[in-house]
Length: 203
Image 1 (cartoon, helix red, strand yellow):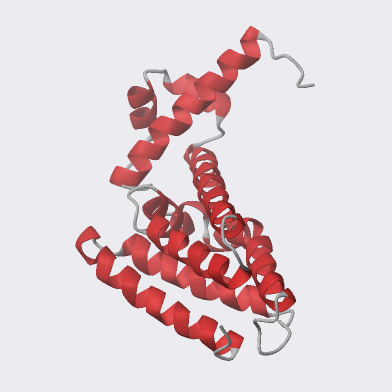
Image 2 (tube, rainbow, N blue to C red):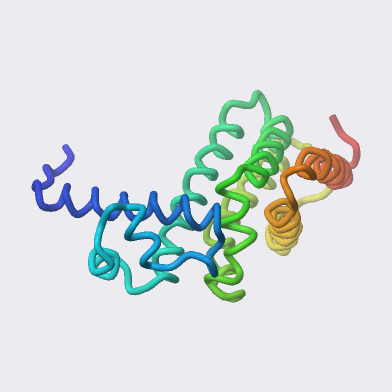
């Protein structure tokens, strides 16, 4: 049974959520470099002190926004896998969902356009591994279990696949909106070929 929360705790959570929501809007629209703590406070209708009460600074606030975006998208990826009749169909559905998310006006810019800048390259890579590595390993293990892979996945496979997906995300996250549709289809075609190579052309 969930433990009841106090009114103070609920108010604190609501304040933090409001700051994250305001920061998400600004980071996506303006970018990390062009958004200030004052901007976030103004959009949230709060004081600058309220921002610093909940976050050590702009980088910490960005990481909270980044985490919320990754959590939401990985829930969608998990749902795409779970809703598929088999692992191969699920892998393609999750891949399509990921590429679509990267062209959306919030996820792509925050995670792949500004993520490396705001978090620093090493921390960004760590965060990407934290969110994506287990999911990729799950997909590869599922494909192997159902006999789709031409050979058993090596220990390096998840890291290599993550590198390719991160590069695709950066391409989409940094591309102008008018290029998204064509670039997404091009990348989907590329990953279809990668998947066909892994499976040895097996259905």
